[in-house]
Structures are given as C-alpha cells and as structure tokens.
Length: 358
Image (cartoon, rainbow, N blue to C red; front, side, top):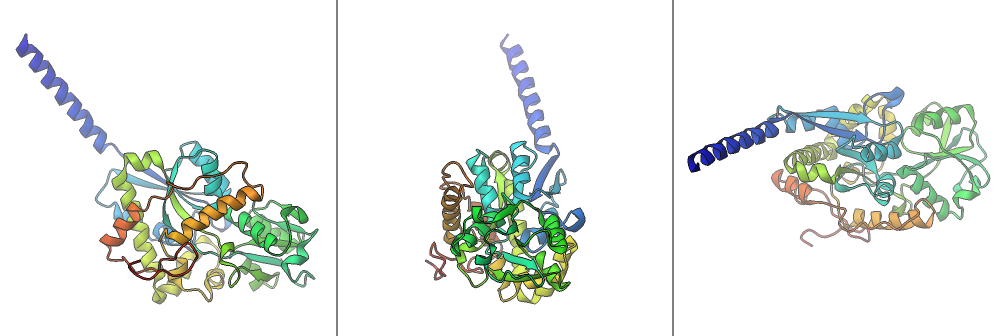
C-alpha cells in the first residue's frame, strides 16, 4: 500500500511539475495602449520616449530572449477615457496616459500602478482662427471653446481659465477630439480651442494663431503622462514589467540627447503629424526636461494637486488617495542597470531642482 501511495504521489508530482513547465512556457501577449492615435487613425504616436520605444521596437528588443512573449500595441482615438474603459474591461496590461484620466480611473476603482514618466512637463496651447479678435484668455468669456473632456488637456485648460479669472461655465465648452477640433477651427465653427502640438499645423497653414501657451507660465499648468500598469499583471509578471520599463528608459536616454533632436522629431512624424509641429512643441525646452522618465517628488506632488483640483473643479465626485500608487522600483533598477543614475535632474515637490545625493 505504501509503495502504491508513493508511486501515485510521484506521478501526481510529475504531472504537476509538467503543468507548471507548460504554464511557464505558455505564450503571453503583453497589451500596451496609447491614449492617442496618429493622424487619419495611424497606429503611431509621437513626441515621447514611449512613442520612440514603439516606433523603434525597443520593447521587442528587450524581450528578444523571450520568444513566447508577444507585444500588442493599441492606439485610442478616444484618448484617456477610452483607455480607462479598456483597463476596466481587462483589455490592457499597460498604457501611456495623461494625469487627469489616470486620476479619474483611480477614483473609479481601477487597480493600477504608475511606473515611469513618458511625456512629462508638456504644455498646452490656446488657438483661435486667424484674424480672430480674441487675443487673450480672458477674452474667451461667452465664446465657443473646444476642450477634449476627460483628457489631461481638460484639467490644464480649466486651470488656465481659473488663472485668468474664468470658470468652465463662463465659456461654451464643446467636447472635441484633435481631428474634430482642427476641422472646426478651419471652418471657424468654434471661436477657440485648447490643445497640444497638432494645432501648430494650422498655424503653418495660416488657418489659426496660437495666442497663449503654458510655456513660461505657472508650472502647475503643465501636463504629465506616465506608463501605468495593471496591478494584477505586475504582480504576476514582474520580470516582463521590468523589461517594458527598461525598454522605455533606453528610449528616454536616446530621446534626451540633443544630438538626436531632429531624428526624434522625424521619427515622431510617423504619427502623421508633421515634424514641424513637434519642433514647435519642444521649442525653447531641453529634451532632458521633456523626456525624463523620472517619477520624482515634483510629479508625485503634481498628481496630488491635480487630484485635489479635479475635485474642486467638479471633474471628480470623490477624493482620490494617491499614496501607494507610484511604484518606482522598476525604474530605479533600470536606471542602475543602464548606468543612468543621476543622468536626469530630479525636482522636489516645490518644482525646484534637487541637488545630487539629496
């Protein structure tokens, strides 16, 4: 009886071991999303280290020794709100997304971790049709203004309005995505639009004018984007998570070198938006500042402030707790492994540079 039991146990253990081996080698598809899409629905993004990582296959290269792991990229015309829906339906493992939609997702119970910055310190612009009498933010009172609701442009626009004595209710807000906004400005169906770099293409064609930018204004008006990941995926696949983060750090290093500035814009133009628009967007700013991967105290404090303001401005119905949301261990390991500790400037909660070693 004992021998029979031992034989049965050995067989069961062998079967279990075989099952574990099969599970370990089972193909895995890593699903990465972008909260934007290229012109004419091109499956590309631009202007960030993550966009470079996608275009130049950094993630695939990082995983070349893992043939059973495949990468699936998705681009969402519906921006941040569409990414949140995809996360809620378990259709994504990671996503590049802006601060406000990330905060909204957390407020609605999405279980994610913020892993690395990609697209930090971004400005917004206020555009009007060429020849418009609107010359400053305060002139928007009562006007039809395009704002892409639920995106990080939305909160930035609301903060700019507040900074110049207006509330969202003081203007006629029309919810439009990038392509619809450009068409409406061209046809003069709206009086103004808050947006980002694609507006520059209308300036090049003398269709619109940029009458305000957050560049040089209050740093609190800046937009931030980061890579976030599903908590469940990170816990189940920390090794894959590390490789994804490490790939974006490599792309961030390349994207931060001033010698690569023109190449960075040309690769970004694969999105269908002209390189001139990216040059306009990054003008007078160092690549290191815009392409930093660091989740430093300034970004964490910015998210804390964004969450508070989103509630005050009526964009959220409940308070959002951000403590414990940021997981920097994967970033720190990538920086150490790639010899990049200290390469990018860290900023404190007050937005001021932090001395090395502090």
